[in-house]
Image (tube, rainbow, N blue to C red; front, top):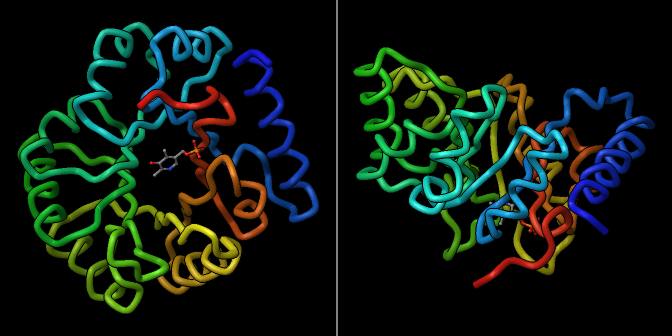
Length: 221
Ligand SMILES: *Cc1c(COP(=O)(O)O)cnc(C)c1O
């Protein structure tokens, strides 16, 4: 199938999955994850009219998007990978939404740079929902204090929570946990669900699903 057909197919899946849960499909954003994909495939998605994309590395995102972005005023770029503090300026030059606020040093420096630029952008806190050593993110127990730190001390516009559930475990369990945490703190958005499991994330409140391979095919290395 072509990229255009994949996008149409996934959009149909979103509509179908959302309907029984009384969720409006415009509240569910399909982020096309274009990391490690060739420029030609990115262009195909743009030609198909898609305008919301996600990348996990600042440098690669600049290679993919710096020249393209000015031609697509409605384009929104989401950062879904770890952000090093020395890349904050580069990231802010390119990205519209940051999903990976995951530690105090980053929150503090990101807030300071945004204030210096007199800007605000939507941010998500990444939660290490399975409390895995190899994953970044705030431990669930630390979320209340970290959220307050982000909002009050760093003046960040925290709009939601993001997670990547542990592999080979039922994702729905972790999506439900993240949904509960967001509700407790009155955060409206949930960035959860990927190619393998976005259908499970939608009933549990996902507002931003991050889909790579099911749109673009296998990634390069
Ligand atoms: C790569 C990536 C995705 C997309 O994964 P697919 O399985 O290709 O859909 C989603 N979220 C994050 C954080 C990623 O790094």
